[in-house]
Image (cartoon, rainbow, N blue to C red; front, side, top):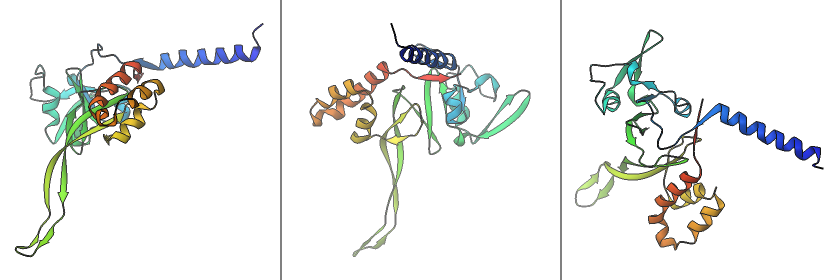
Length: 211
């Protein structure tokens, strides 16, 4: 006879599972998402975008890059419940266009080529080089340069962080079996295999938008 405690635990786990399924929707690559703007990370998690039909613009809404062009301007307006709203483009969290996600990093929007539990992207970063004194020419002022950097973020917190070997280890380690397989690869080859393992992790761990 099955102990009552085990029956209660099984019932509790089943109830949690059913509740989670009712409160969320699994995302798969085949899902077709409407083009639109996510004002905040919370909007993104709920997949509650300002869809392009709501946006007020002179641009042709049939253009494939309509949303991107709208957010390339300083502000944009949209209609919600017959009320006109205007927002600063650079304050928006991101957008989806042609079933591809874009995220805001310091006022510019970057495509997310690898999307899932672990998302990966490349962004252009402004680096400030401190001034220095040269005995021949005197003080040389600070300069800025653009550098390409790799970033990752966890779908469930939305925090964009620079992609390093240690950070990749931290994210992949949540799947013990996959991580052990990854760590068997020689250290010098882990960097080139990291992206493949991020994709494998995402295949094993689908993400869920909140309803």
